[in-house]
Length: 198
Ligand code: GRF
Image (tube, protein in one colour):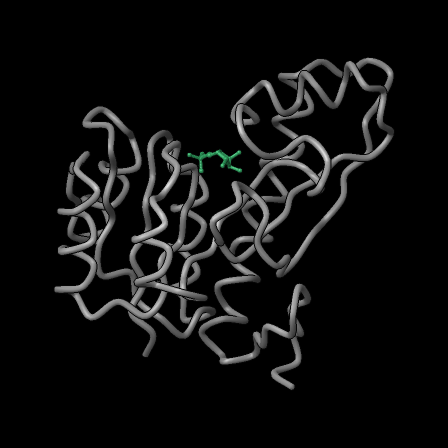
């Protein structure tokens, strides 16, 4: 059984998708702890409702201590609006994944979070957007890509409607990626991630 920590800053709908998939046995793992850098994050409530240990902690050193104390195999950043330090990333090398609401390498990196991502996609005029789950390295949104899925962008779209459409597929994508990780199917080969375990 893979021990998972989920880090959130907000609503935690991606967290909820992973909670549900662990509970119904689709994911061969268990969420041992949910940590938020924002006390009012609804994600903490979702964790409590699922009887998962929920912690509000802003200090990164303490976050590291907590994760190390829980014997965690996988750290999932699910709407965690804080850049991790190189020390954090090194300690959990190839064990941290993040979900980003665009098709990386478009509309990502420093400053691209929340609604801004979708606003920029609309302004640029792309016809497809989507979501990406990737391993985390020192470059913001720059680590090896695990899975991507696309959605259409329609003439009538604004940042809100596009965000909503992307969020729906995020919930599928994060579950698929965590499942692959927990089943031992992910192999990093240079910048590429093989998903067949070979
Ligand atoms: C998602 O769009 C995710 O891609 C981004 O932050 C948002 C979090 O949403 N990193 P939620 O808290 O999971 O509802």
